[in-house]
Image 1 (tube, rainbow, N blue to C red):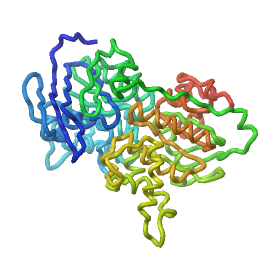
Image 2 (cartoon, rainbow, N blue to C red):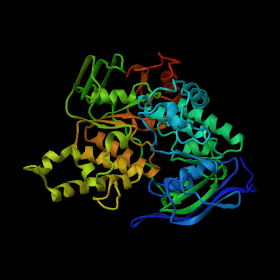
Image 3 (tube, rainbow, N blue to C red):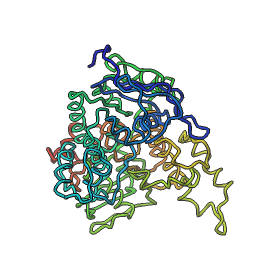
Image 4 (cartoon, one colour):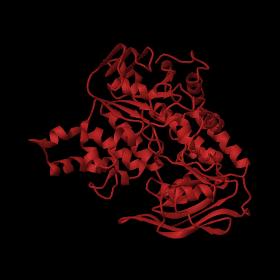
Amino acid sequence: MHNVSLPEHLQAVAITKRYGGVCALNAASFSLRAGEVHALMGENGAGKSTLARILAGSTPADGGSISLDGAPVRIASPLDAQRLGIGIVYQELDLFPHLTLAENIVIGNLHFPEGQWIAPSRMRAFCAPFLDQVGLHMDPFLPAAALSIGQRQLLVIARALSMDARILLLDEPTSSLFDDAAERLFALIATLKSRGVSIVYVSHKMDEIFRICDRATVLRDGATAGTVEVPHTTPAELIRLMVGRELQLAPRGMSSPASRNSEEPLLTASNLCTAKLKNVSFDLYRGEVLGIAGLVGSGRSALGAALTGMDRITSGTLTHAGAIGLLPEDRRLQGLMMRMSVLENATLAVLGRLSRFGWIRRQEEQSELAPVMRRLALTCPSLAAPVSQLSGGNQQKVLLARWLLRNPAILFLDDPTRGIDIAAKQDIYRLIQELAAVGTGLILVSSELPELLRCCDRILVLHEGRLAARFAAAEATQEKIMNAATNVAANAAQPC
């Protein structure tokens, strides 16, 4: 860890930012030392991503000052930030999906001078080392649209590395990465740190914070709540700084395996095959939370696409007793209409019962949504506000509200806590328990193994589209799941 006497490399003082009547940052201050990994923490909506975007030049501040190595600087655009050696990996990935991996890396990159003609061999030579660094051993001329969301996250990290940043802002960088890719990222962060690169690490994952970070600054309601030395603090203290109170963590609730033997399953998949799945078989019972683990590209999201009809089932059978809802992996691209209002997004799946003769009954629409909002602790400026103005956690709650209004018998949750804060996670964990308690069958995909172990009754592990293992949650460990996910011990499963 770094000595506290080291000089500050970057300082942001009294940064203020307003969006209409909403104050995103209220005289927030932040400092970064050379060669440190500094966590930036806070609940969703606390201002973390806004501060990161201001430092990266993509959002102008309304007030305050920024200095680099003691000299005042003006960061009016991403190019200004790049010239100053500041790079960023956004939580909501800013890629051109129809361009190739290589084109996404070199476009606007000051370290790759563009000319009228660019030889593909030159692009390949420039991009390949950075793709290799993050573990994307792929053809640089593959379209970015062909990548999974986890692979896209690695591509954005590769792009940031190619810009030779002295300060690297990472906004929830492991939110879509399974443990193997996350380990590769941690090793990369250690290497960059040893070279004197300063890293701002925005994350809600306590285990990561205490593993790799030197200091942590906590924002609350747009203001700086405090900065602590990570080795000398505790998770409880960080949570207290984040929420301003002691947070009672919801206890784990599990259904009884014995009760499943006396009833028919809600859903049965037998030798299910699609373009990405190979002979996957399992049952889901009423009131059960069934976890799905696996590496990026293992078929976790493909399973949800198959169950909900988005991917064609080429062979095998699927039977289910009731409607299936899907909370998708990428809420912005696959779930939400970002320019539409909170109300419009939440009620989209039940407009049939809220309309008459083609006209939506707005008063009834609002009255149906109100108790669901309270149940989810969903906060927003107004129901008419565009959903794009909400924090990541509240955007996720809008999607959950859509399915609570629809009330499906089976709900497939694809990484539902990706990129959301610890308080919002607790709200979602409680909701999962409540839904299971009333008989909803839930399938929970997660990149966080502790989350699966905490929430699920059973856990299935996928490897390259096949079912590699199945565990009773009480018998599962992170090591067993990882062994199965990486195919180290394909026979480690115990029938359950």
